[in-house]
Image 1 (tube, rainbow, N blue to C red):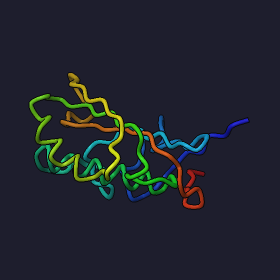
Image 2 (cartoon, rainbow, N blue to C red):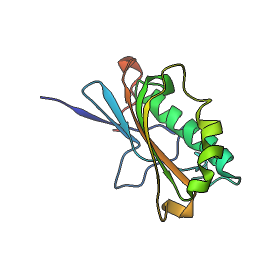
Image 3 (cartoon, one colour):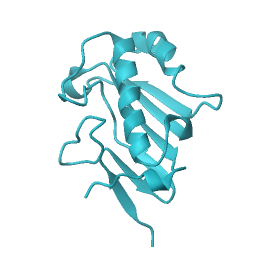
Image 4 (cartoon, rainbow, N blue to C red):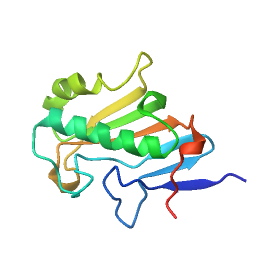
Length: 137
């Protein structure tokens, strides 16, 4: 029988009670969508799409680390943009976060995102350091 491990780290924004930051199952980590929230305050940070992309990927990196994974272990990314006009600027930042093997990716425009932000990203990665898993108890 497989197990599911909910993940919680204070290095990323706290999740709402209806979801977890991530779930580890069968050697994979599945993150919830992340927006450009400051982990300490839970408020959206100021700035443009590039600042927001940096913050989102920093938040996801923290969740991945707490899941026994890392940004370099990501195998799939889903990006949601409020405006496809931000695609090129977002990509300028995005490409700096992944190594030589880029993950599979989808990027779509959506009508509205949480807190009316401009970007949300979720991903799936391999768990390569299971001893580092920080379970939500």
